[in-house]
Image (cartoon, rainbow, N blue to C red; front, side, top):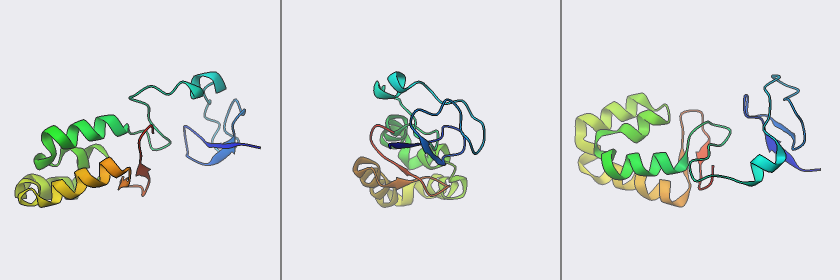
Length: 112
């Protein structure tokens, strides 16, 4: 029995469930789930590729942190130019490793 995360609430559900038994959110078809596009989002609703691009081009502005809901630290990066580059470099490394965490505590990894 294979489990996946609900698109609405993030709870684990059976991969063939048409709707989430926890929140009632409709789930995508199994065939559509197999074909994961480059801008796919995970249960957290955020795309790894968008996060990567935001950090690469505007990391010193903290935009990538605001994208994942970390508004306070995003503003701190904006005011310090990404912690003079060190903080944004650390974030970029974590994003590349697939270990960057959003405001809800979810890792935003490749393909999610």
